[in-house]
Amino acid sequence: MTAALCADVDERLRAIAFGAVIEALREKRRLSQVQLAMQIETSQAHISRLERGERECTLAQARRLADALRVPLDQIDQRVSEALRLSVLAADAIKPGALYGSTDPSGVIRFAVAYAMRGGCG
Image (cartoon, rainbow, N blue to C red; front, top):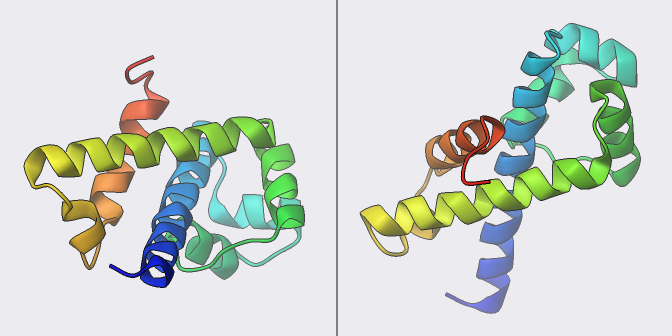
């Protein structure tokens, strides 16, 4: 894999993990996508695309999301990193390199986020 392709894959995986973390935190706060969207002054469709990893967000949007979810932004970043780490470990346990070769790695990443949110390995 070329460096540029690896960077694209890494950004895609990070977007999926970020979205899964945001979704888990939103559900933990018992907020609907509409309620969260209203709090950060965006659309429900935008929140939906963020949660599916189809859209990246700006730093300003990430800060607004963190504020609305009452979680420090660095904690969201830590959860995203942990989910990615667990996803790679889980996928590699099944088949080395599987996460990077998958056309839809979101299932593995979402599982890792759910695991990490429940306390996971820590």
